[in-house]
Amino acid sequence: MAPDIRPPVSRRERPAKPPLTREGIVAAAVRVMQAEGLDRVTMRRLAQELDTGPASLYVYVRNTAELQAAMLEDLLGQVDLAPVTAAGDWRDRLTEILFSYTAILFAQPGLAQSALVTRPSGPAYLSLAEGILALLSAGGVPPARAAWAVDLLLHFATSTAAEQGTRQQAIDADDEQETLAAVLREAPAGRFPHIAALRAELMSGAGPDRLRWGFAVLISGILRTPRPEEPGRTGEPGNTVT
Image (cartoon, rainbow, N blue to C red; front, side, top):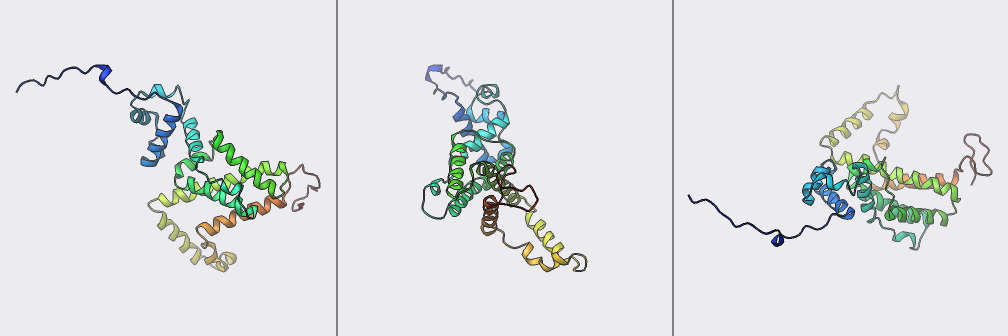
């Protein structure tokens, strides 16, 4: 058999690779996450995706935590902020924004778990925070209280997405749910009278209704509960100002 002799290919004839950018690296990371899961988003895997060496990526992204924060920032650009300027009750509009945020993270539970400890700090996050603050202001929430409320509302949304999204992907999620339901059904009424009286209710409301109720509870509490240093607070547990 004659040897396979191929003429060398000049570098000038090869298609040029696009230059590396932080935006391109983050976009590639999001693609890998959506196709393969967050645990596959490593510097080695991204280098393979971008046809480069892992060391080259650290020029643009210092570590995995920074990369995941940038990925979250990228996804936050998809949050629907139209309710900020729409008509209607400010509570309903705020809930719609929080619902949009939760839905985006629900689709990526691994990133939602990361978001519990890794915070984005780009323009998309600032736009989200600004929208929440604008609606709290429209509702008459004092500015200092509203500042704390942003973190509280987003934390509830993020933790819900992380828990529910992870549970949806778990292979044995249905078995665990049924096990809990069985334990509640069989709990002795003499020892656990409140559980026995509310067996069905404890497992009810899965889905958007329960999430909306949770947001409503938080918003109502934010309206009625002052920060410790606010004028008019007595300092006694249970006392609030409206």
